[in-house]
Amino acid sequence: MSLETASQENLKILLDELADRLNVVNRGLLDAEDYDLNKYEDLKLMYDIVVQKGRLSTSETQAFVEELATIRKK
Image (cartoon, rainbow, N blue to C red; front, side):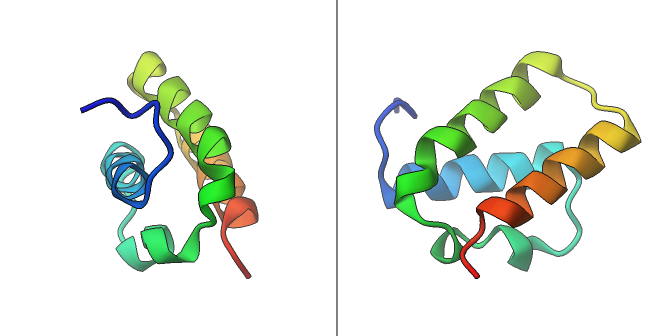
């Protein structure tokens, strides 16, 4: 499956993977229904960075979680 195409299914996969890689305890913060599909490219970019980087420092993880909060629908 290619994650290049913006779809609700791919959005859910990206957010689930980000939750795993960022060790997010409250998975409700990364519910796909709370994110606009128009922001898929931003989320995909964040996903690619996290995957490429591998291990993140605590401050990097916090920065990614904060960025996800700004992308999330209010």
